[in-house]
Image (tube, rainbow over all chains, first blue to last red; front, side, top):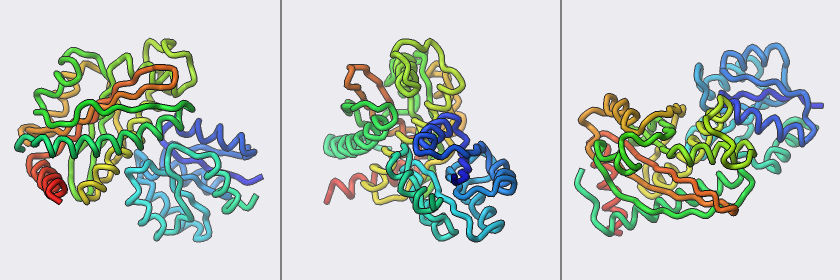
Length: 120
Length: 205
């Protein structure tokens, strides 16, 4: 089963995502609330897919993405954003993000994206 | 910033409806219920009048404050009266409405995120209407009397923000739970003039 790293400073959104992932059968889920924490967990867990919020309290989501891509240019990172942050998504896609998911989460969209990028 | 004409207010109200429609759609996904939306006021008020719009300086509210950058620099203040924010928290956490008497840490996280999503919806509608790029940043939540919230914001904007764009949205769930949301768009005087110019250019089309 694929390993997923969920990065969002909102405990509520991490809970919503974790519930959706559990329903979809993804049980190996690690959570991080900060960019630095996400980088530590990325090194430790080597997730198959990272779901990364664009807005984080310490280092921004796009900078966290850059650091992840430096660690692993083949990393599969899906950016998570509210609709008002869409302009930032274009930059993230240029930096190596594979796709983006707009909040609030659509379970079917997450299912399709994870099937595509987690491979299972 | 000069007052809006009736036509400009109508245009802003339309933008409010579009944004509120997106916001309601997003919220209905989160709570798993259909939401009807009504935009009751779209206008400009002065920063000092802002508390009266919500019901007076001493009205207890939850305020989600989000800085905005892009083609304009300013902020969104999304205000929920206390009863609305508690009902909203109950809906988000799948509790019976009326269960919450205060916001837990998880409730606060939920409300901040809802503020992020709802403001994003309204800002997207506004940015498309104005033809300007508006990007929101990290939301901050505070629960206090609305007068106190406004005072802390006035420190930041000072004399610069004379006029504030306001869109009042009433959302009603299928089970007739009403949630009031007040979107205040705060910009400095120069930015507010640019917004007014863009509205006038659009209305003049």
